[in-house]
Image 1 (cartoon, helix red, strand yellow):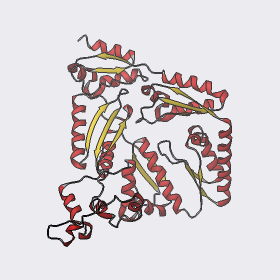
Image 2 (cartoon, rainbow, N blue to C red; image 1 turned 60 degrees about the vertical axis):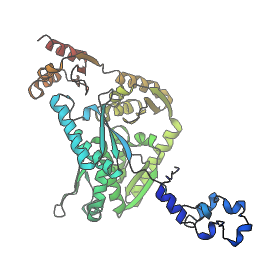
Image 3 (cartoon, rainbow, N blue to C red; image 1 turned 180 degrees about the horizontal axis):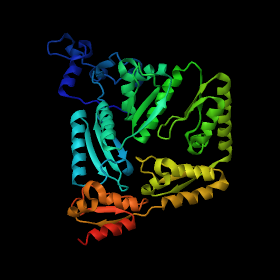
Image 4 (tube, rainbow, N blue to C red; image 1 turned 135 degrees about the horizontal axis):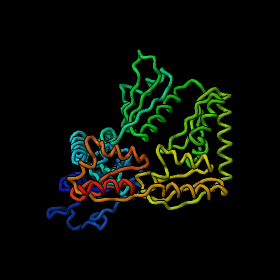
Length: 428
């Protein structure tokens, strides 16, 4: 990246004062050298060679050398996406909208970062955070904790490895929590439990769990081996619902850590006794090589708003397709604008998998009904009782979710049957 130097009055004065007298030849009226005018080279010294600047950046390079340092950008901008199903304030009624705005203001005041919220077409929440890196990371952690629904999971590692997760003065643990936007609870030294509890979003928990297992693997006295496997082939190695890798671990007694889809790492880490570990590595290599030879890919376009239906709750739809067809379906990240879905598998199975992808993408229909803002609280009912009753009677219905910023003429999105139910309310 190129840097830009800004010349100010102070830096110009500094530049001039940095020139040694011998480099500035000025002919004065009383000088004995008055009859010997300066040459062109004396008056206009040549610019320094590029190589010279690189080789000796500390030394002045002629009269054009300067002490001006490049200005580095200290403000960064990141965009975080909260999926609809993970939003805490989905109904966006008067209370929810006000509470969300209040939380954002508190986060800005506490971290010094600037937040801008917008609603995506799929009713997910996009949050643009600007500020210094440290402020942005702290704001992200607060956003996840306060605006996104939380889940929890546990990971078991040997008790003696807990201190390595904590790190000196707790610095490693704090850094891990910031990186993954999770809360990690480690049992006290006098607690015999080896279970570490992780609280956060599903994606954050996966990342934190992966990092904790890597730290533990580094401290394990047993053999540790790392195998580079292209990310696209990880689903075949894990198998549907992680059954295949589970079988290999059980049969060989080797712990196998495959990075989750949300983590960009490609290496699979094996920990175990030397002989059994070698067996596990050999089996994984065999699966990898076979799939590389036999599989091919096709790319199809699926509307971004339909991706969540292809993925399914907790990724179940993807696992169903993998189990029934042996085809892996790759969905672009939620914060990517891409609508391209990639199917990877044996050529004769791709057609069946493609049919299933389109079937799941079109398994939900979206309709809307307009209702005046004053009517919303009657539709929702006390503590959401009316909506709860409708969704209990129709478990496959999702909604309603009014978009933010449309409090005067809100539009609620849900399935046609629920639309009909809500339209009845308009007759009051």
